[in-house]
Image (cartoon, rainbow over all chains, first blue to last red):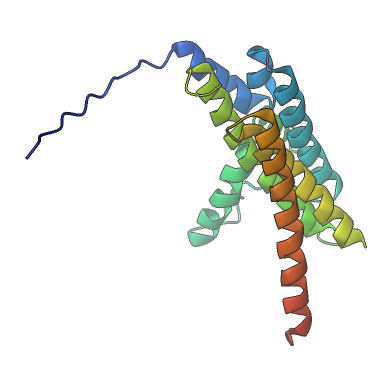
Length: 140
Length: 57
């Protein structure tokens, strides 16, 4: 029986990659922009900002645990909130100014708006990971 | 038509992000993005027709 030795090389992740990842989360497209990936930054930033603003325009709202939510109800708000937080500074700005959290259930496109906002945040997590991987040298 | 339009917008924007973060050459990523877009529309039409025949209302 032949014993195999697997050598794993541990490559340090540069601190710059974490900063790039953070920047990519905070402002959609910025992570790629800082790495001079102009086309990717434009496409990602355009798509994600477009989804966020379209979502708000369609009557969607951002999620946060409300004062009236208790127990399991509050927990249910945390999952969509985690998705919304992916939008980065836009979510924080809306949270500080108290805008974007109001329900517009009377609008026909209300559910579309919510879906756009949720998915925009989730896609930005994906884009931030992509920017991190590029900065860490794991991806071209 | 409004629902179809917004579904199309959603599919385009999502497919762009999936295409950009995919691995491979530019051409491979373009093809992947187009594939994702097509799959979104295809699945939406199939689900739409299934729901049409279900007595939900």
